[in-house]
Image (cartoon, rainbow, N blue to C red):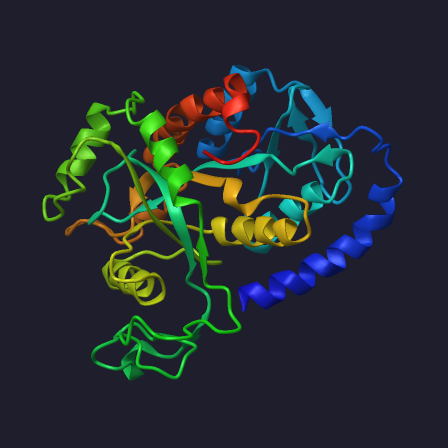
Length: 347
C-alpha cells in the first residue's frame, strides 16, 4: 500500500540524509514561501514548456544542490524554489529529500504542482485546468482477470475491503491505508477564482480534436478552469472501461459527489511526501495545491487507432503545459506579491 510503503521509505531516507543535512549551515534557514513542482527536466515537451516558462518568468536563476537529488533545485533568492520530479516513488523521495534539507524552512511554504495529465471527457476539455481538491490513489486494490470480475464491478480491480465495491459510503473504509489525500478545498477554490480568467490556449488543432468527441458534452467545450479530483496511479492507463473504473473508484473512496477529472502518475507520491513532511513538522499539508491541464483524453474517439493517444509527440502536451502555467501564474504572483495574506495561515 502506498501509505505504509511511503512512510517506511521516508523514514529510511530521513536517516540516510539526516547526517549530511544536519551538518549544513542552518543557523538562518531560508524561509521558503513557495515551492513549484513540475516534471520538467525529464526531456518531455510538456515538461520543458512548464520549466522554461517558470524559470524565465520568475528569474529562478540560483542552482541549489540538495543531498539525495541528482539535479539542482532552482531558486530566486526570495523564497521561491522550483523542483523537477519524476513519477510515483521517485517524486515522493525527491520531495522528501528537499523537505529534509535544514537549509530551508518550509513551515509556511506553499507547494504548487504545475503539470499535465489525461482528462476525463465527461468532466473537462483539452487544455482545461483542474485545481485538485482530492488525490485518490488507484493502486490500492486487488487485481484479477477482467473476465473473472463481478458483473456490477467489471474492472478486475477491487478495493481492499470486505464490502462489495459499490457499497459506498463504507464505514471505516480504508482503515490502515491512505487512499484519499484530501487537499485544502478552500485553497483550491481560491486558486481557481484567481485563475478563472487566464487566457488558456484554444487553437484550431484543439477545436478540431474536440470535435471528434461529440458524444461527450464537456469534451467539446472551450478550455476552462474547475475544481475536481485527481486519480493517481503508478502506471499509465487508457480506455473507456478504465475511465468508468476511475469514476467509480473516486465515488467509492471519496463519496458520490466527488468527480474524477484528470489522471496522472505523480500526485499520489507528492501528496504522500508532503503529508509525511507535515507530520514531521517540516511542511504544512494544508498548503499543497495541484494544477493539472488535460493534454489528451482518457479515451479515444470511435474510429481512431487505439495506440494514437500514447504517441510521444502528441500536439496537446505542450499546449496543456502552457495552459497549466497560465492558470498557475496568477496564483504564483499573488503569493509572492501579497505574502502578508498567506504567511500566517492558508486563505
